[in-house]
Length: 68
Image (cartoon, rainbow, N blue to C red; front, side, top):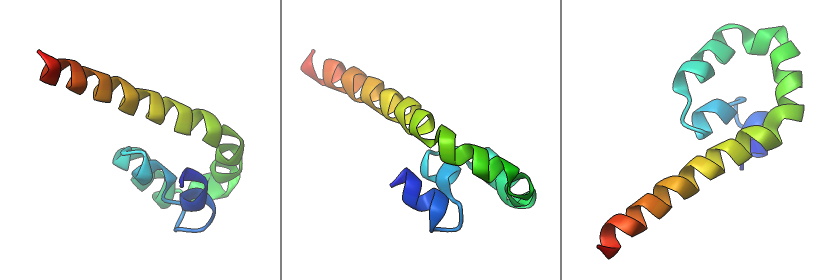
């Protein structure tokens, strides 16, 4: 989904990952006049992995809280 948001849906990949401040900055600078957007194509896998790791950690914490 992150790649779809980057490449197709208004370059909203930061918003998809919950980083609205970065997303607004990205839009205001037009993706760094395209440079930032191009770099993000190659960084997208690490951005998604970091987001997924954070979501997994939150899920584990929630499960532990409910199990006690």
